[in-house]
Image (cartoon, rainbow, N blue to C red; front, side):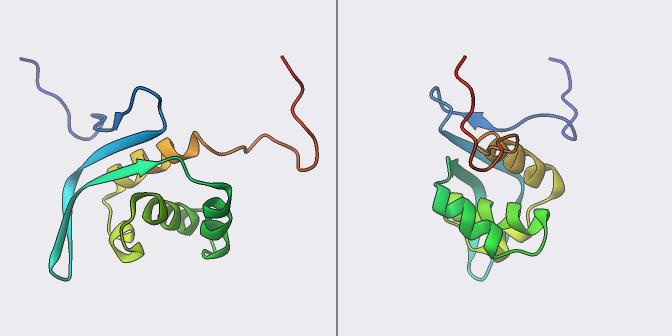
Length: 110
């Protein structure tokens, strides 16, 4: 069996409909008495996107808040994610944002 490089290996398991995903953590996080070994992410609501953005002063802070909100973990736990797990979770959640939409302008039908 070929050896997999853990630095680039994707661990995210996305549901068939793409609306939820499970991310087994490369490095479990202990916070208080609880250890988190995986995240269950889901599509955020518009209000959750707004809340995550309002609660942070940077793009990274927004991503940390959004990971916490959509997975149901405490924000300090999300802030302790290793960079690879953080990147994978952020990329998944980024699929639900509308970065190329101009406010007040409806997208043209295809």
